[in-house]
Length: 89
Image (cartoon, rainbow, N blue to C red; front, top):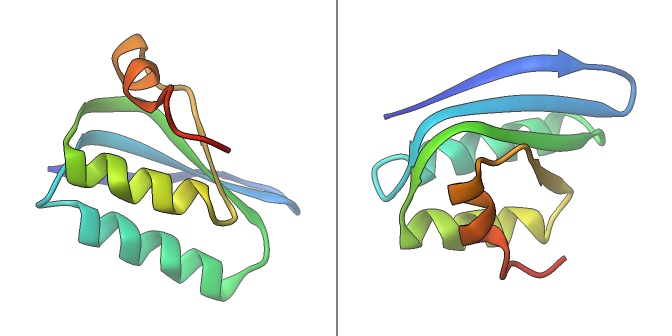
């Protein structure tokens, strides 16, 4: 299960907090949510990963794909930061 909550917005950035697992059962939901914001606005989308408890291989692939777009990743736990450390900017 993954909960996606918009926690902040200003003239440049929208922050979405993710809580739960980013895995094969939730990647489509996250992709759709991000795509929706990218279509509606030209603001930078920041994914707050502080509530993420698990990331599967499919979740890592999606985060890599999203990070290569107009989306930034932030505030991951040590577990999340370790998994994401190999993702290139």
